[in-house]
Length: 257
Length: 257
DNA sequence: TTGATCCTATCATAGGACGATTAGTCAAGC
DNA sequence: GCTTGACTAATCGTCCTATGATAGGATCAA
Image (cartoon, rainbow over all chains, first blue to last red):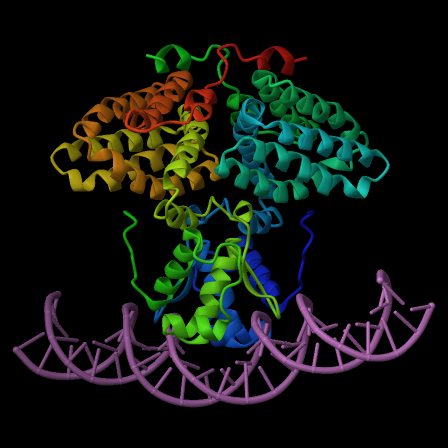
């Protein structure tokens, strides 16, 4: 069940190599070399290279056409929600400002997913979430399993939200969290401090307490960020507190009208 | 600036054809025919078919490998956030339950994007948003431009949120809204009823009133849904009101601890 | 200057060949 | 009987070469 497959196929190497190079800005906005040349530079055939380029094109990283060659699209057109793109971006420079965007995005989505999970989870799903937490808590003695277990735990919650879009995004954010967790989790005590929050989240969902679950999920996303924020100069305008909804939501009054 | 290019290339036809067929469930979970056969059935060469399959594989619709052939992955693995997948899904059956997921997702993301836009938009961006609204309001006499103008308007807001992820998602949700707008907008008066909300949203962001902007954006997403909800049997458990955050967010009290 | 025409670089697509991988089978051994 | 291991065949992985389609840019005439 754990997502481990990393088939080091030649194709994957080319896609990753090209994707990383583009995200890194090696070709910034300019055209790439012609296919034959590019293929030669990777030491692969032209067909294989074209398959790789087509994948990048499907992620809106490049456009390709006769006589115009293969051109890198402006950054704003990229499909940043694609897990591959997100991964390449995270391993390129500028990862820090991008990291804030990612945390902010998770602060928006994950609490709501937890909220819905608390309302909609079936009994089986509740049990699955608790089991996933138990497995996760065992990581105290098996730190190398933290990634997988954490992923399974959050995945279970997103699935329980009974919204296919949220489930899909949770699945994918999980992949990306690795990179970030990698940076934060090896701070001594990070796992231990996160554990009670995980437990609380599982309890909140079990108890069908949507507001509680939402609150816990929010703190759970924010915690590793705050671990980091101290050691970084956070631009004032990007304080993540902004994302917190106003204490008094005006929605309820007007939406029910 | 309007995204109109629809190059009816053979490659695109094959990708769309295969993608639609998979989403439609023609092969449900089972393996596809072998490459040679599949290529023949589309009347194209094996290379072209492989490029198409590789694109689908990059969207997590299928896995492909020697001896295992090309297998459709379980639905839960699909990258539902991919615009192509979303499009294929919307044109397949089951579009209705998926439509609820989409609205719910937008109810989560778009109000927050508006919230952040109100806080962070530069003067130029504010002006751009107002201009986009003006252009949109002209659609009263040019209904065929509604899609494009509406897209530009929302895109401007998402960009002003200064979060690359939100900007990217806005861009893509826009594509999908077309399909949905297509269903709702030809109800007489839908555009006219939406117009004041658009205006209010532009004003809220101009006034830097984040709470107001969030509230308006929420109603703006909900409106076309409610137009529909009346004519449909909405499963009780899926009432979209659930997504509304509790009046009293417990976050502020506990997070500062 | 402008406009149409032609040229050419580059991708689009086809088809065939061979190598690499592995699911599935089946026989040998405990 | 069950496990283990090698074997086989099917299928993708990768390469190559060739031809058609497209469109940018140059050329040339009005």
